[in-house]
Every structure is written in C-alpha cells, then in structure tokens.
Amino acid sequence: MQAQRMVRPSNFLNAGIVLEQFGDVQLFKFSEALHERRHELLEKHKQAPLNPDEAAEYAGICDLDRIFTRINAQLAAAAQWCPLNPDNSPVTAPSSAVNIATPPNI
Image 1 (cartoon, rainbow, N blue to C red):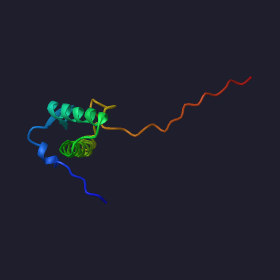
Image 2 (image 1 turned 135 degrees about the horizontal axis):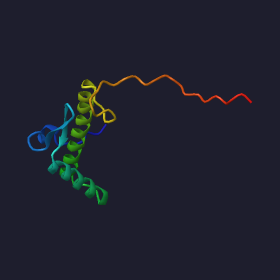
Image 3 (image 1 turned 90 degrees about the horizontal axis):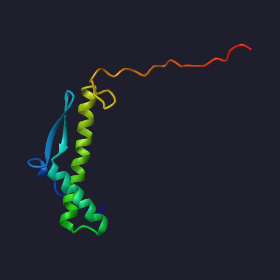
Image 4 (image 1 turned 90 degrees about the vertical axis):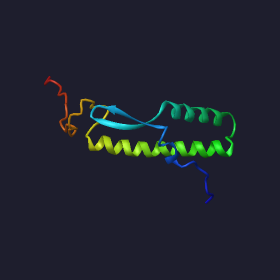
C-alpha cells in the first residue's frame, strides 16, 4: 500500500467550515471559499494532474467532505429529520396496506 500525502482536514476548521440551520438541526457545511477551492481543484484535475501540494489539499478537502456527510447524517437521524419530512415531525413507518383493485363481477 502506498501512502498518500494529504493536508489534514483539521487545517480547514478555522476558515472552511460553517454551520447552517435546517429546521431544528444545524449541519456542517463548507464555507463559500472552501467550496470554491474544491471546485477549482476538481476542474484543474480534469484538465491535468494536480501538483503534489494541490493533490494533498484536494485529498484533505474530500476527506473532510466524507466526515461532514457522516456527522450530518448522524445529527439528522438523532433529530429524526429528513429532507422528505422537513417539518421535523417524527418519521413514521411506511404503511403496509395494499390497494388492490378488484374487477366487478360480470
């Protein structure tokens, strides 16, 4: 296994992270500047390989994105919040009722 160079995700904590309110849940998001930097590195990578410093920075940003996804999912689950149920009411089990059309007797 080859070691991958990466900027530690904690390097982005001071300037790259914001909390955004969604209903009763606050979720972690990238700041506008970090979001733009990620997009810039991605577009540059599509054209040619990134230099080692840029590749390390991009790897750190992507790792932080995976961390946020996991944490935000846990926060949303703990608050019983989901995008399909934005009023934050408790999630109910799906109905097991079946709607069956019966043909008339002929």
